[in-house]
Length: 216
Image (tube, rainbow, N blue to C red; front, side, top):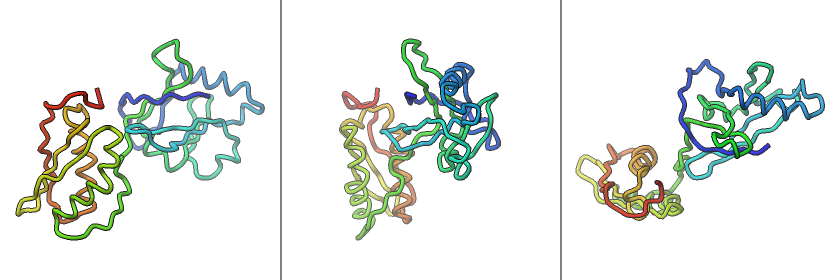
């Protein structure tokens, strides 16, 4: 089964709703494929987030026997289809939708997921020195290597006496439509988590400037 993973945010129905919904078109495709398997009526559609690719999750979809999904999975039914989502993937799939591509010429299935990975999750750096030193080390050792794949970088500008930190973004991140959100949601969280004495992270980037942004 092939899987394409463009992101198109949907709205979750709340924490008690099934984590992932399935459109009628996707259901027909999945049932058709499942019916080609032996003991098809006993199989669940197993869904797992296997990793990340830039600002998207990567997924694995397969059919699994009852024994294979007995533990470590959240199971529920959608019509005649049993769905089993790997436990650690449940919240990251909350509000997602399994569908077919909008381009009828394209095969496979699409997961449209309103959730995106945190590229700075799990940052663990031994930071030393005063506040400016710690911020600069964090940017250089952990954050900029991730931004480098987008042709960009983040730079420490300064800190005031209240421990507000000022950061600017450059390269492919300047003029980038997503860079403001990246700084706000990613870099800001990473700095404030790794350096608790930081009161706030302030973006000084001129997001109207810059050419050839990575994101368009």
